[in-house]
Image 1 (tube, rainbow, N blue to C red):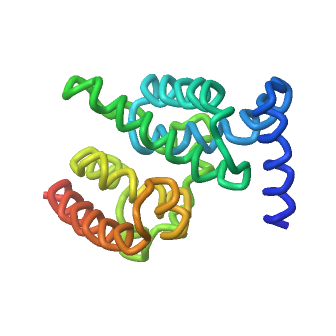
Image 2: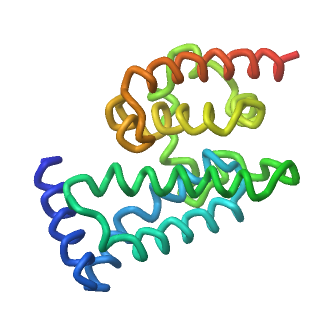
Length: 188
């Protein structure tokens, strides 16, 4: 089933690369909610997440003709999204505050499945985790979001971040430890 969906997406990507706006619109429709969810989880601010989502799709449309292999669209798109979120964090400096919890997201938090989180994370209060995510670096938050919230494999994350899977595994371990320390700090 997944390969059939990917074949359909590859067809849309090929058409969009040739300038077919309807095909690009279909790609946007399919990816809008997950893109916003990732941006929201990384950035923690609805306004910034909306801006990053829009910027991501603008960049994808602008650079789509340069994508050589439509089958790699997913990784290419993910890399653009992550880099857009990183740029948003660098651009805003320290002037932001996390303003929306996962349960207040447009889908009511339906995209967040606590069962997908590691066993020790499932027992943590959502508010504590939300505040703790603010305390870890953007790189750590990104890898945690991609793995635990978006349920991407190490290989898929590696493709989106443009790094080896073993590096993802190492960074994920480090990010989990950082989050655990941040949660303990929030509990005090």
